[in-house]
Image 1 (tube, helix red, strand yellow):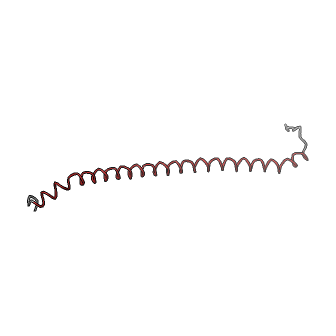
Image 2 (image 1 turned 30 degrees about the horizontal axis):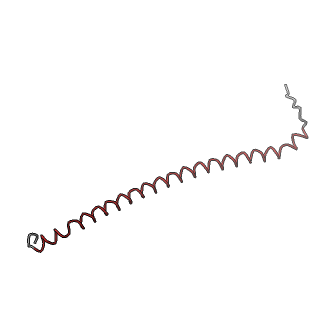
Image 3 (image 1 turned 180 degrees about the horizontal axis):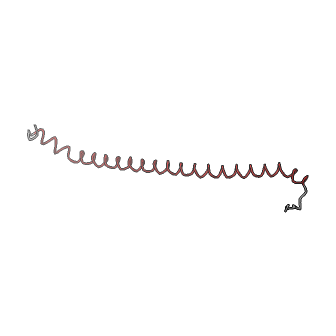
Length: 88
């Protein structure tokens, strides 16, 4: 049993090139979508790592500021203790 198509053989040959081009366009579009998704995931991971690093740096700066404030607050007492001979 042979299936007869409503399109003639000549028409099928004429449609072969546009069909191949359409398939190639779909493959390119799917590849571009997959590439964009992968790029977005990598960008998100990089952004999250940068935000974590920024938070660590901010915490470090805050800790340094607190330590500096403590030193400034107690430097006079330290110098007095050192001058009085309490700390040798």
